[in-house]
Length: 263
Ligand SMILES: CC(C)(COP(=O)(O)OP(=O)(O)OC[C@H]1O[C@@H](n2cnc3c(N)ncnc32)[C@H](O)[C@@H]1OP(=O)(O)O)[C@@H](O)C(=O)NCCC(=O)NCCS
Ligand SMILES: [Zn+2]
Image (cartoon, rainbow, N blue to C red):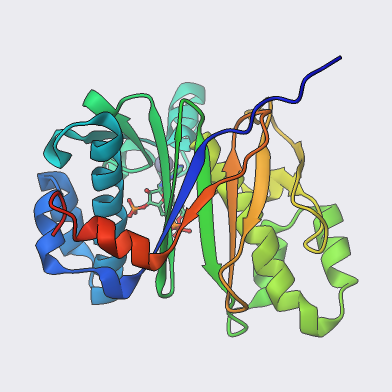
């Protein structure tokens, strides 16, 4: 008899951007502060600040160290692959440090992923298993047809076009969030190519169906996260174990940010 594998311990933490507070800036290192000050809009600064502050406080708690001891190495697998194959598409090391933050130092071994959209910041956390999270605000104002051409694979596009027009906007962002969560889990990011990653139809249970061109994960758990009608969000974990995340609300995140380690 084959036993079901135990669920992977995963955490999801939500925060509204209203939780950003200048006192949290002291949790950022020099490079992060420099990046933070380069954003032109306050909303972008707030989202970036919250993502980094949440990551550092949570990892410090898990690793049992002060927040300033938690460090990150940024790695973009898309750029690493381009470097390896000699392809040059105008991205790469020239554009400075970027990519998925990998905890180093006392928190090494933990995996995190951060996403921001509209008024929400979300962070996913697990030990020893790469995770990717994505939140997208549903926005009808954008050029949906153009975005669909850029991001949906052929079978996804056909299924999407069969939907009643009123359902298409929400479904599109459902596809996008699922695909981007997977691409972020692998560290490829959007440059990894949204069309390469095929997922189940937006109205079906989330699942990774195929990954063309190589570089895909051996196993992936994918699930939708609920953030109301205005948003679509998804979590991916590169594991064959089932994933049942412990979801923490904005209020819990605010308590974390106001804890002695926080602001
Ligand atoms: C960041 C990216 C994953 C998508 O960005 P997005 O949808 O605007 O943003 P999200 O809020 O969902 O995610 C941003 C977070 O993803 C993380 N991230 C960045 N690159 C990543 C990668 N390759 N894999 C996983 N996570 C990544 C970072 O933590 C980032 O947060 P931060 O900017 O506050 O540090 C990225 O692939 C991207 O923007 N690509 C656009 C093309 C580009 O810039 N190419 C040049 C570099 S290859
Ligand atoms: Zn890159």
